[in-house]
View 1 (cartoon, rainbow, N blue to C red):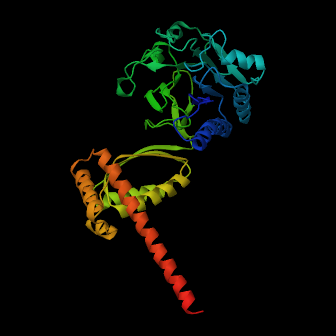
View 2: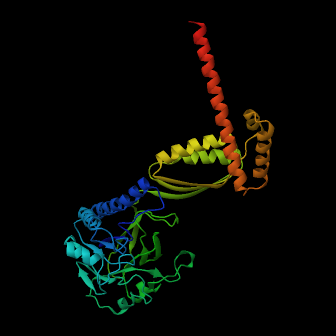
View 3: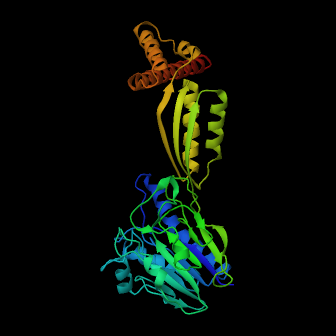
Length: 387
């Protein structure tokens, strides 16, 4: 039974400029590691070919070193790699693909199908629909309907674009693909790229999604599809294979009840080196909770691959006991109480919040310094009295 590994949207060379430099480096390198795992899976499952449905590279301008490294990563699978161009690496007259060929770094088992022509292999024919510009407004898969392939061969379509009317949130975009293309072109499998989440559209059509998550959409990335087809016209058997390393998460904690606080601390403690997290905090916390939260965030940041925290919706509201412990009297005490009242009454009182936090922190630091000084003086006096 012929078997294929369907993958797409490797986006090799992608940079992650919205994350701090160390995390961005790990995320960029993870895309090479994903290709390495795909090669291992292809060998493990003894597939007849790996189908790569476009956007192999993130941009036309990737470095020569990046190109060479990508093709070296393919050495883990000795069978055919069948690649087409997508919107990020369109097959322009001068493109990343012409550069790769000029560098002579494309292995002999890597087939670059950059024109819409039938390519025959052992037991199957590939009908490619490579993009030759970033945005096409005609359906570049339409030619497949009338394409002639030798009898007895599976018909495998390979395309990059937007299947109209079937994607989440009603997404339609340039590079349109007819939703019934597999049926119209009598395809045994239509391997698609462009949508970064894994999605099975019908029995013969699917997006594999990107093998390594690269955004916070939560659309099920991080996979490749193992597709087995018994014979022309048979229903494919599809198995989802895990590939990705990093878990991208968008977390939201609205701190109102003690259970909210406990849940947040537990989630932070559970993060590890494979987590990429954006955390949005809202609600109100005491000064003691703020110190505890900062310690938990510091630990989570050290463990996670990347952690971004949005805390503009988080208010500092010291308790009566905390304010009393500050022993702020006179004008300072009046200002402190006024800021606390304004922060409690107006959740979006940013200036009052900032001032309250700064003043409270300054008072705590002053008190801590005073306590340390008193302790030091006492120790000195004790030493002098015993000498």
